[in-house]
Image (cartoon, rainbow, N blue to C red):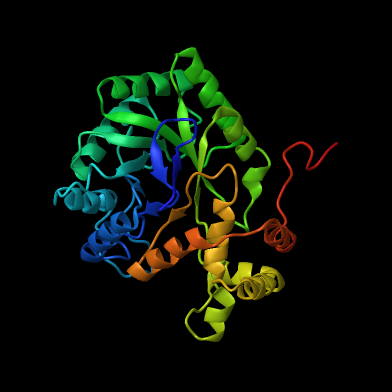
Length: 331
C-alpha cells in the first residue's frame, strides 16, 4: 500500500480510502466486518463513513436499520479489539437530519455537539480522526462553526476537520474564518470527481491546492459507469435504468472509446479510472465503496496501474477536463 499526508497535515493515510456507505443497506454486517479486516490486510488505514449512513433507499433490499446503523456496524467491528481502532484513521461526517425535531441536522454549535457525541457512542470510540462537514450550511456563521469545533478539539473528541461537497469559495470562506480564530481549519475536501465529472477542476481544486487541503474524491467510477458498464450490459451482468441509462446513452461513444482504450492498455476500465485519479496531483485518496469483497480486491489493483503522459493525454481527449477558472472561459 502507498501512503501520503492528508493535505498539509502530518496525518498519514493510505492512497485508497474505504467507503462504508453500502454497509447495512446492501452489505451485511458479517460481510462488512470481513471487508474491513481485508482492508487492513491490504494496508488501507483510512475509513470513511457518515452519521446518516445506513438508511435503505427505496427499491433496494438489505439490512439497513436507518440513519446511524453504518456507524454502529463499524463500532461493533472496533469492539472486537485486535488493534482495529488504533490502526484506523476514522473519518465520519455530520450535516444531514438525524430526526424530525429542530436542531437535529446542519452545522449549528448545538448540532455539532450533539451529533459528535452520538457518533462517538455509535462508533464505540472516544475520538474521531477526521470530522467532516457533509455539506455547506448557508445559515450558520463560520465563527460559530469554528468555535464549536475548537471546543471539541480541546476536549480531545476530534483531531482534524474536513469538508464535503464545498464550492471553491466555501473553502476560502472556511479557511479565512479559521485563520481569524488561529485555527488550522480544513485538512480535506471530499468531492465528486472522476473522468466523467471533472467540474471541480474549475475552482475547487485550485482553492484546495492554495490552502493545502487534501482532496478525497467520491464516486470514482461514476456509479459504475467507468467500470466496464457496456461490456457488462452486453454480457447481461448489468441492466441500465433511470439516470444511469440516460447518461450512458448520452455518452455511449465516449464510454465505448474509453473501454476500448482500457483494453488496449491491458487493464480493466475501473482500474484505469481509479489510476487516473491517483495520478492527479491534488488527490489524496479516492473513496472506494465496496459492496462485496471482490470490489475491494479490484480497487487495490489500480495501485499497480501506471499511466504515462501519452495515456493521460488520451484520457483527456476522451473525457475533456477544465482549465483553472477564469482561463477556461475567459482570457
